[in-house]
Length: 455
Image 1: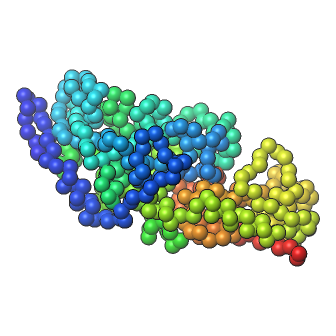
Image 2 (image 1 turned 120 degrees about the vertical axis):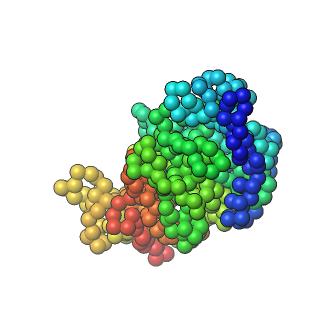
Image 3 (image 1 turned 180 degrees about the vertical axis):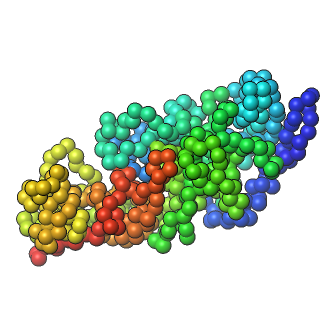
C-alpha cells in the first residue's frame, strides 16, 4: 500500500493483496483440499468442495436441543457458488465516520478506527473474487452464518445452556478461505455487521502500524488461536495461545483478556488455520478440522463399531454379574439402567449400577468405595465420546475422562488433558472436549478395567 492525498484527505492505496498472500503461502504449504461431500452434507446451492469444519467444544455430537440451521455444534465450510470475500483497498482520515461514503453504503465493507472525537480512520474494502468469507458470532443476524453461544460445562438440556450475560461478541470473527487449492483458511478478529461495517470505538485497543496495513486493532475480549505442535495426530502436543487482530496479525496474549494494551507482535507466525487449530471466542472454543485432516479422522460409523465390539465382548459387573452395555449417548431422565456401566474413577474398575457402598461422610452420592480394591472416589456412568472430530487417533476406546466419564482412546484423553483452554478473563484449564467439564484427578483421565464374561 502507498499513502497519498485526495482532496485534503489522507488515502492509503493497495498495490496488491496477492503479494502478501504469496508470501504466506511460501511459509506454509499444507496439502491441497478437494473433498467431495456426501448428499447428506449438501446445502442448497453449495459446491462439492469442502474447506473444513468448525466444531464447538463441549458437545457430544450435537447441541442438547439438536443441531438446527445456523445454531449447531458443527459448522461445515464449503466453496460458495459465488465468491463473497473482501480485501482492503484504501484508507481515509475523516472528522467523523458518518461522513465516510463507505460507512454510509450498505454495499461496501469498511472498518472504522475512532482515534478521537474529531479523527476516525476508515479502511475501505472491495470484493475479492479469489476468496470466500464466513462469519461467526452471537448475533442471529443473516450476516452471521455460524451462530455461537456460550458453552455451559456439563449442560444436557436446552434450559441448562442458558446464560444471563454472554461474553461472546455479536460479530466475533471472520474466516476467509482461498477458492483455489490449497484453500488456505485465515482467521480475523471481528465480523462485519448488518451494514457491512466494523467499528472500533475510541476506547478500543487499536494502533497505527508500521507496515502497509496502516491501522489495526483487537476486539474487547479478543479472538485467541492455538495450533497443536506437530499437527493434530496421535503425537500431538499443545501449542501456545495467541491473539489474532482485526487485520489478521498474531500477537502474544494480553495480561487480561479485555486489557487496552496489546501483546507483542509475533512476526514469525500467521493467522492460517491449520488442522487442529483451536479458536476461542471468550465463552466458546471451536476446533478447526481441515478437509484433509477429516480424512484421517475416525468416522461416526467407526466409533459405533468400536462401541459394539466392547459390548460384544460381554463385559460383566464383577459383583452383580450382569452383562453391561456401553450406550452411545447418555440416557438422562433420572432412570437407572442396571446394564449401564459405571466406573470408579480412582481405580478404573467398571461395574453395573448399585446403591450400596456410599460413604456416610460423602456429601455426594457419586463418591463410593470400590468393592474390588477398596479405593474411595467418584462413581460415574460411562458414555461414548461420539464427536469423532475430537479424536487424534482410531484406537480402541480404553480410557475415560475424569470426572465426567466420557469414553475415548488413550491418546485422545492424553492430548486433551494437556490442553489449557481459556477460562474467564485470564485463566486456563483442561476440560473434556465432549462436555466441557473441567478435568480433575491426577491425570484428568482413567484407564478402564472391564471384567469380561467367562461364557
